[in-house]
Length: 186
Image (cartoon, rainbow, N blue to C red; front, side, top):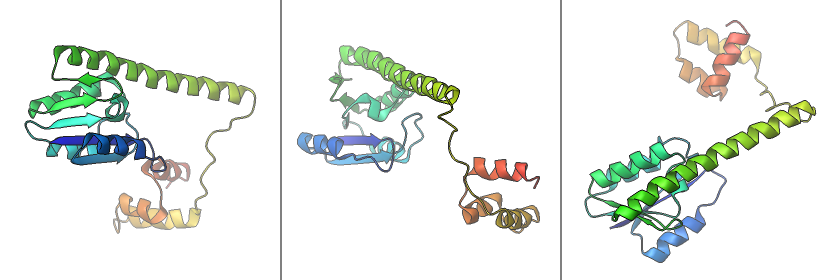
């Protein structure tokens, strides 16, 4: 069975190009993630890895869709191979059923990791220059109703609710929640 795996980095991005490729190939089932590829802890990827069986072939449009670093790429492909399945990447023309394909997988995996690290480095350099020029102040601070935060923290501290429940009520992510709790001395 041909099984596709597609990934885009954000919910706003469109995966249509990858899906069209799957349709052209005759992929019978595909899995999708709409989140960063910086690590391999993605629901669609986990579902795909548990679904594949011996004799299946996992197809991706590009290796950067399945992993952004060499370690994750090789680990994921090893899991695919351990189930008796194969891996093919269209863009890089990689087919792991051959020794040459396995070698090229490693090379292209290293290139994908280098690309990600270069993007991060350029972004950090650009932010540093913008800060020096006074044009970058970072992400705007989120407005939080301090009274509501205090009330939710009081329930949490009294054991009437969990911290996770307080975060849901306040619609805050853990890092923001704990940072504000600390700032307010709660």
